[in-house]
Image (cartoon, rainbow, N blue to C red; front, top):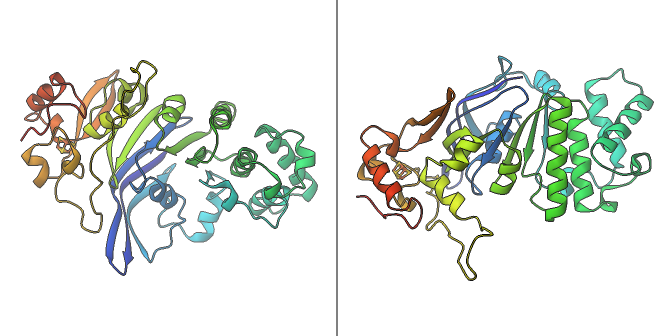
Length: 348
Ligand code: SF4
């Protein structure tokens, strides 16, 4: 399986004007790979995922660019063919399991519905057997009994497992998990992440995991795409991004995690300011107003993607002028000055 998103742009027409939620996103996901999509709320992560699934109605959305899966363009595919792909080839775990499940329907019926929609000749008994098997795989104890229960009878963690069972019952080649652990306590979070990792290994499924939690990313990802203000601002192998963040926003995100080595009373760093108004996106870098390393060029010109490093033939790229040949001296100064929110400040 290979998924390729190219120059994806999604904007929404509203009474207040047109808001550009996704601005020229490029991402790739390879066979059996886990890509973590990271970024703060409203940066375009979920809109990108829902556009890949063709869940955003257009109009009112305006969608441009290309999304191909194994060479098939999804954005222009007739809806009938897209229905064959949705669920069967691409499964999605939504953010809130309570609103993703029908409270009036037994969970077993909801799960088998996904199966019989794609295989109309399948006998009900066979579909039920498969659903019970998948509920077991998703870590639901005593699945034969749980099959006839309703969503309200389950805890948050169990409901999330049901949603995962629904997403994987057709053995999709790609699983998109949109903040799958947001509403869960840390123990259940760890169990759900183990489960997704297990499914990836056992079924060879490629995974796109969307999160704002760097701990989740460290646990799961082969590669990371960092989103900011509707754009991918950094992309590379997980270990490269963690060890050597090349965009100031990523560096700031990593600095805002607590550490066990901290002194008592040490304050958590935060990124000052707010993201730009996407009703009127800036001409230059979207992080300009918050960036401790900003230069004059950043205000006026949108940076290109520059290669920050290349280890073993794998590129680590950043949408930042600091990696332009003329910005490298500023980068060196920024790094030697402490690299981060407490860095040398504006380099203008
Ligand atoms: Fe943006 Fe410039 Fe800061 Fe890079 S250095 S993140 S281009 S403002």
